[in-house]
Length: 289
Image (cartoon, rainbow, N blue to C red; front, side, top):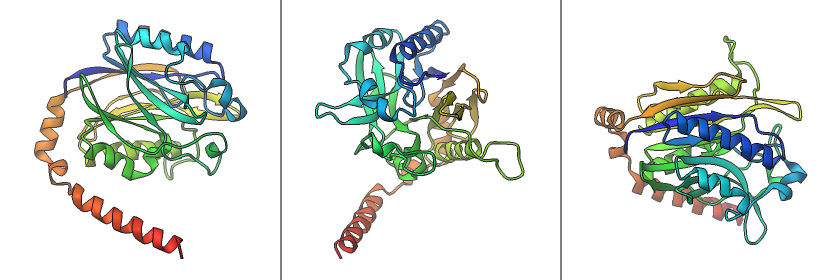
């Protein structure tokens, strides 16, 4: 991995307002570029807002939509990771994270695990993705996951096994609960524990970009952060406020920690594949009665 400077754009998107949100993206991209960042990352559904419901067909975009051209142009100067809803050629709508470099999509990840509990009913209007892939960029091999994906630990394991040195987690996480014995939000404490765990066990960088603002009475808490391969928090945005924060991700930290703790070297991917295939076959047999 090449050393690079990352910008976390913790924004407050407007629900269903593509024009406003695109202008917000371009403003933060300009600020990140001026500050010398190589990559800027935005939250889940940063172009659309989150609680879309019946607005989904109005704001979903195919990846070749001309309304994305300003972001393509901006990515000539800085790599851009952003959240949107992608409309496929057969008119399905999928929560997506796109990685733009030099005007082109290097990779698009579709959210695998839709949330259908508590406050959420994503599966009513959206379709889920079917793959987790790391991908190559000029600065190294990376992966993107979206919110609920990270609550299922196998997704981060797949990304790491596929060679990702950086795992980006784009989220729209509401503030919920209070952590026992602290003044922290329960959701914030859980996210921070997960980010640190994934970074440490997979010996990689974890970048969590969460949004802020209110939608339908729900408050998104922010707290975006970058965690290094040794579990150290390298940057953290404030709670509940829009912010642009920066961190430098260095290959030397990966080398040092992987030398000290060779978990990646010793991971038995073949064994994992065989055992998951066995479990999947057993479940299929049980489901068939």
